Amino acid sequence: MTHVLAADIGGTKIAAALAHEKAGFTARTQVESAAHDSEALFESLLSAFSNVLDEADTPQNDIQHIGIGVPGKVDPVKGLAVYQNNLSWRHFPLVSRLKEVFPKADIAIENDVYMAAYGEWQARRLMQETFVYLTVSTGISACIIHEGRFIRGAGMAGEIGFTVLNHEDEVKTLENLASGPAIEKEASRTFDNTALTTRQVMDQYKNNDPRASAIIGNAAGHIARGLHQIISVIDPHVIVLGGGVMNNQPQFVELVKEKMTPLIQNPIQNDALERIWPSHYKGDAGLQGAVWYTLRNNEKQDLIERQ
Image (cartoon, rainbow, N blue to C red; front, side, top):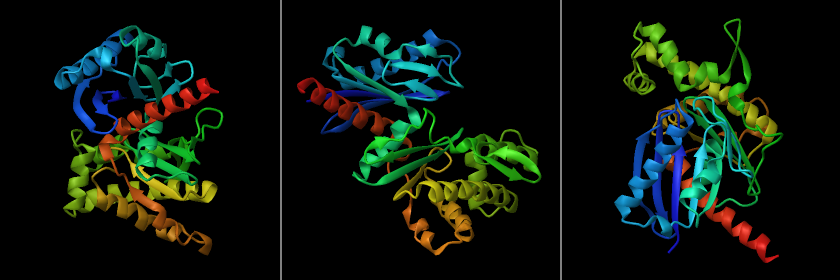
């Protein structure tokens, strides 16, 4: 049986799981990210892996594959965590360091959004289509998969959160206007309460609080504009909405689609709303993607070696 360790690294926590190729996750854990120090962060990752191996009573030497989603810029070929805005890794040799601990394992790393996108793409069994995964969380980003391959551009394709939008005579990015922190910042100003979380604002929106409805409605409108740009430029067959702000919020997904309706001015885009779907794996998309990605990466390497 194939044993796979998967991890989804974030600025505040690391989610890890042990999976069997045919049996799904058999153990999982979550630990805090020691984001302030590169070595401490690496030890946090090892601690998470140790926890799931202990829970599953699986020896370390049985691990054949490891897949890890890392935020920010990574070099999957050289195995480097190049730059993470909310973490301390700078050109950190993640793969080689893990090889010292798991010498028998094939190890693959990738950007965390790409990993989540891969999980959602795999869940839909798409092959020839153009697929986009848009995540709205601490930041806003997208990943494009075309005919089974990531579209990377010069290295940072999909950063829709950097899109500049005009808002109330100010120039701001989509991320400034509609990410989780942006919603919390606006809620702090509107409610005069710095402790409100995005989830709490969402709850108040669902309870028809007019102030929360205005905040969430504005965020949905900005996301709709970003989606319309994606559809106009790339014309994907499928768009999946994920990330902490979107997951488990079906009302918000529908609100985004509602806000997008008046933006569709050309009849050739009339079916655009039918191509937008909520996340299948939700918070597990990154872990699921890490499992599938590392298994497929190994299959491609086997093919290269046989040739």
